[in-house]
Image 1 (cartoon, rainbow over the protein chains, first blue to last red):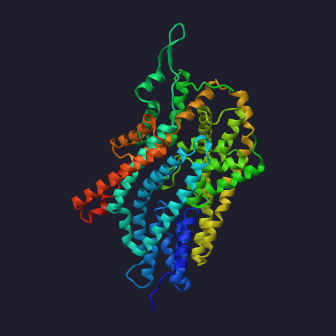
Image 2: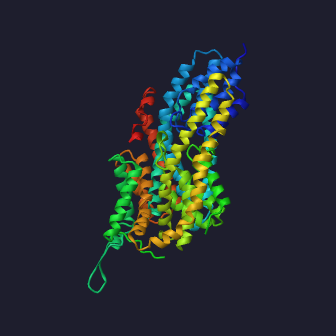
Length: 277
Length: 283
């Protein structure tokens, strides 16, 4: 029996189906399962001849699946490689593939969320915001081009690397070198986010103590600026971070707490936007 | 400034493409078209005022700079923020005669965008629930061996979910919302408590966005120092964001080399590589 080998066209189709369709049919019950099925379908079609075999093979992938979709592409590539090995009669069965798949989706989601959504996107957006001064469309265009280029090429790389290396691909994303890169990138992200906070958050107080002839004794804002510019902005960020990470309060509730603080602050004269129509 | 039916339909279409389980796919849809900054450009083009669109989009972007959806739970869904919130904020700012670039203008935009954003959560769960119907059909197709129907289930039928949960709400709310500006103007004076609170909330909210991100990357209190390093660069030394990215990149390269050296000298056995993993990520 000739060894079965997935054609380039099939792999490209499988990648495209994942790239586009991984979340289009999302539900709380089966998050990315259908995207996964669509991505494995061309592969199963090519590797198995009878409809019964195809159906049977595809059932492996009907188990629940959810991960960070960009980095998660590597898992799809890995299973494509494993499925090919299985079709060639190696000692791999559907249960084993599913075990690898289920074991990977958690760690990959954790790394992907912090690396892609928590670091890469904010860095790109931070730079894009810097280019948007005065309403310039340059920042948005920069983000559209760079993000799509980086991620599309990255996902492609991960898919084919996963397919080539099979189970060994795991090392690429959880190995030592990858961990060093991740730590470094997270540090870059944290610095940029600090700069974003200082550039784009603008919290000021209008609190002043006046003496009898109306000249101020204490102008709180200029006192604070003397200590450190933007001190209130930094303090508010830390306060929100403390509520969320130490007190385990959800972002929505934190927003509501800020509404209460704003309301009380306005009542006591701490905040005053000083506007009129 | 008014929103006509044609513009509202375009907003509706972009809402379908850009939401979390959106029809544009996550890379082009949610993570590109859904970002408020990009939406500011799109809405600006549709409304014929790119400059205002970008200024508003950028202001709202800071609040949602770290829109992480761990395990498919959302704190706010971008379709409502970007394609309902930004158009309405544009109409409101123009209608109230505010300068969009002023802190009052951005405060208004942020407060309005975030308020509308909470609606997005409802739309998100609505879409996911309607999708259950198509998935049910999908399982039947797999049982019967009609495997090609999976494509229809995954990529075509969800358009119906989005017509109900993205398109219609966006068209209706943006059309109706444009008239609300006059009502606001008549009943809520700027120096009243309600409007003063609204604008103050608008200035406080971006702190939440940054804090969500900090929660992701700070694993020990010392990491906060990295954040303050970036903060001080911009606040005191006046470095802009591109400059901060370059300085940050320099330190990142240093850290990378230090870590590699540490791993080399520590001679970590290969088996240990699997379980060192990312405990710090869960904090």
